[in-house]
Length: 111
Image 1 (cartoon, rainbow, N blue to C red):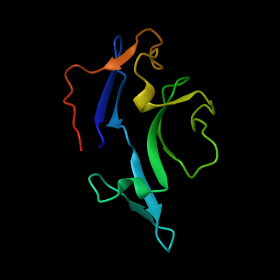
Image 2: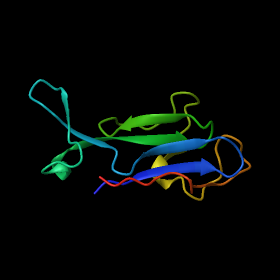
Image 3: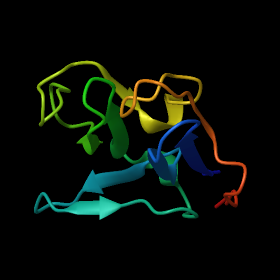
């Protein structure tokens, strides 16, 4: 089961929203992505996934495809990246003053 998350900074306007399972997919015979959306009969059969990440150095948010060999920030080339779902409790990468936590006003969704 996939669930949504909504993360906000306690000090500034930084925000990250998404789904904990990312976007799982396989490749068809022509190499085209075929997504395994929730709910599906077997979403765990997907070999690859696209996840949301945040650079803890420059606050750039990005998508990361698990087929890629390396994980570096396209803006600052830092390797200090964190999956958005693991941002809870970390210092804010944007203002460096606040702490990231669950948005109490956001509705949690489950698929």
